[in-house]
Amino acid sequence: MELRQLKYFIKAKELLNFTAAAEALNISQSTLSQQIKQLEIELDTPLFNRIGKRITLTEAGALFYSYALQTVNKANSGLTLLKDLGELKTGDLSIGVTYGLRHLLTPALIAFLSDYPGVTVKVSFGTSEELHDKLIGLHLDLVLAFEEIVADENLTYTLLFESPLCLVAALDSPLANQKEIDLTAISQLPIVLPAAGYSTRKFVGDIFVKHNIHPKISAEINDIPTLLDLVKSGKWYTILAKTTVAIDKELAIIPINKINMTRRAMIITHQDAYQKKAARYFLERLTAPLSKFGV
Image (tube, rainbow, N blue to C red; front, side, top):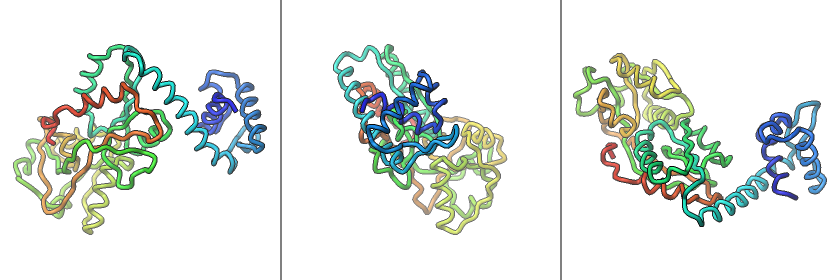
């Protein structure tokens, strides 16, 4: 059993298409098919059902995927470990970030790239669900996101800070100078919220359900800048973590009283993946003073 065969199997499983997998791996389809066939012969069991040009995982293939992913990850971690013995003059770092933490990311990114210009950093913004899947698939080295209600046992969560959810309004809103507001009053306002997939959307929705409150949700949007543009128009309100909008001078933040609506910002990593030196150095810069972000 060879490491490259496991890599080929993983890519074929992810795409469920030999042609697409071969193109992604920059090899011929015949090479991919041959190597996977040899792997199946060695394992003495088929990993894929082949139905015409379509493929699906067999039960054995589904079980084997976890093993293959873990093996390839450990091999990659060993290689990264050896590379990290040298100075950090080259390499790469892949970071996933939810929009609510982008203001925290920027200064840390500037500081890191200034200190280590030879390292290539790839930043992916997305919903918590999207970033979770990429981290599980080892396409990211770390994720900055708000804690999910149900944690994944394959991931490690490190608390970054806690931030309360607040009502967000335009500066010229009649509520802009209000010291606090309760959920019942919020339910009477025209609200725009993040779309499904954002952890804040689920968190807020669960709070409303728990208290049997039915807000007037005018729109659900999967682009936070667009959502905030609607709020700045003065016609709508939203509910977000204080840190998401704390440094935006065009918005007013109104605390929500009588209820605990606190989000926990986390650094999330994969338990089985070796943490790169680049990741460690980046996190050192990330955990610089947070007071200016309202936490």
